[in-house]
Length: 93
Image 1 (cartoon, rainbow, N blue to C red):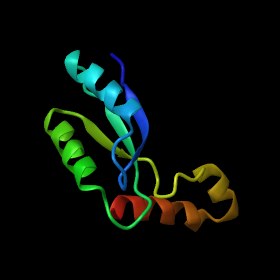
Image 2: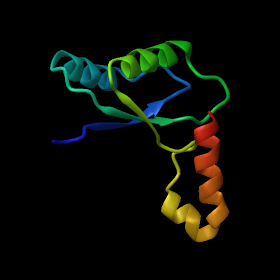
Image 3: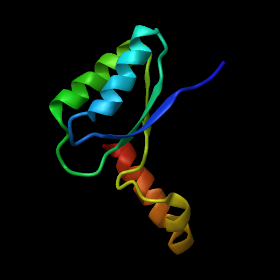
């Protein structure tokens, strides 16, 4: 058993062609994966949202990959609440 994770999917932009290629390969092989989504920005890209919903229907997982793609460990060294806020904002989006 293994888990395939693809990180750095931006919610506010079209899915990068290299990530689209990985998704296609995994779909063809019938291997669901986990997509780590960065939520920074105000408006989500509608195409990306639809694609993510399609993948969820096929058994894929969507994971929070923070709001601003910051290093949570470094942020926590500055402020414990900073890391929590980063996660909360991402979760809300």
